[in-house]
Structure formats: C-alpha cells, structure tokens
Image 1 (spheres, one colour):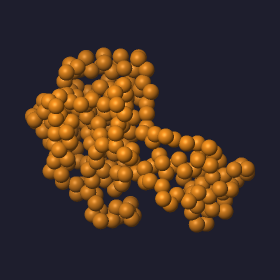
Image 2 (cartoon, helix red, strand yellow; image 1 turned 90 degrees about the vertical axis):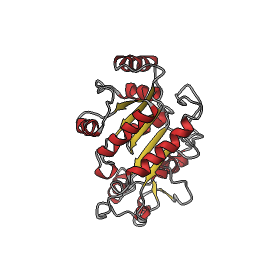
Image 3 (spheres, rainbow, N blue to C red; image 1 turned 180 degrees about the vertical axis):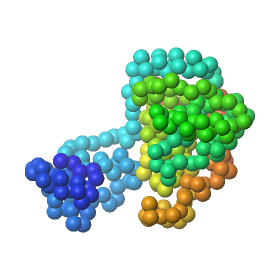
Image 4 (cartoon, rainbow, N blue to C red; image 1 turned 180 degrees about the horizontal axis):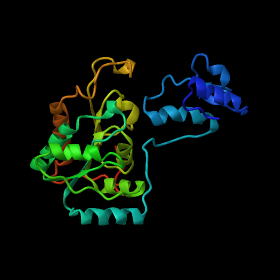
Length: 270
C-alpha cells in the first residue's frame, strides 16, 4: 500500500489491509501504522517530486518530472476540424482562456478575464477560445458579458484527448489553477496561471521557463488556514498586476514577430 494522503483515516485503512509493505509519510501519530515511513524533508515542493518519494522505495525513478499526454492522430484531426469550424486559421494567434474552477479560492473574477481578453484582441489580434466544461457555462457567459469584443463561439463537447489536442494548437493558455492548465502544460503550450491560496511552485514543473504564474501573497500563504482564513487572496490580485505579467510574457513569446509554439512535436517545456 502506498498512502499518498497519509492522513489519520487513510493511515488506519493502510494498516487494516495487513499488506506486508505499507508506505506513507512520517507524520507524528501515524508512522507506526506503516512499515516504511518516509521523511519528505529536502524534497523540492513540486507535487510530482514530492509523491515520487513514496514510490522510490519500490524502485521507481523519474528522470523528467514534466507531465505528458500522448496524443493520437485522430485527436489531433478532431482538434483541427473543430478549430477550422470556428473560423480559426493556422496563422491566427490562438489563446485559450480558462476562467473556471470548482473551488472558489481558485477563481479570479470573470470580469477581469474579460478585460484581459479585450487586451489580447486589441493589442495582439488574438483569437480567444473560452474553455469550460459541462456545468461551467456560467463562467463563459460571465467573461463574454464583460468583453467589448467577441471571443470565438463555444466549443462543442469534447473528450480529454481532444481537449489536449486543442490546447496543443494554441499559442498560449491563460487561466486559473486547475486540471485544464495541467493538460496545457502536458502538451507543451506556454501558460500564464492566476493563483489564489495555493503555492505555484507546488503545481508548476521545476526548471522551466514557459509556464508563468501570478499570485497575491498577503504574507500568510505558507501557513494558510483555509477555510478558517478570511483572506481573499485571489480577489486581492489586482487586474493591473496580471495584465502586466501577461504583456511582459508576450513580449518574450512574440519577440520574433510571431507566436512561439511549444507543441508535443517541438522542444520540451523548459
């Protein structure tokens, strides 16, 4: 048993299995429930590396911590067809904007994303592809309602591989911290992510330069007591701060006069 949670309940369940090897974190009051209690001190904060420590006793090793999604030709063709149907040309500067999250502390206000989308359209002639899943349509509507210009029409329902293939064809992903962002990273698309209470270094592959983050730290993020905490970290992140981060990053991406694309067939992120 490998217990990635290592909370009191999961530790008891691990012990109850009677498995001859039970690996978990060396937390006080729980270490005796495992046959191997791992001390995570000294590991880099990136989540994948942190969890890797629990499977290394089994002989697992990882030379590259960047997540990957392996796309097939059919998924790429579906993505091409969808974008063509939306009127996106191969030469267009395509930006995926993802304003969604099911956790309120990860949702940067939609009206600010709307203003950001207008900047991308006005200054960079970007085509904006709003991304949201079933039950999240209100996020897309809120962003559209805050925009002076028009984003692309809504996407038809897609599966995960088609979603990843769509992200691969984009030049930039802008959005909240969440699952879609990890897919964008996995296919090598540059990202700019707005973070709330979470610490960006935990969820961003280390030793890379194409995945940027913006956050507001009131001074207590490393000892966050959410939901008892009343700080609204993500709401306190000013629009101007994110816009400046976006413009600075775009100056790098567009320094040669055209978007720099990092698809799966190109150089690895970082």
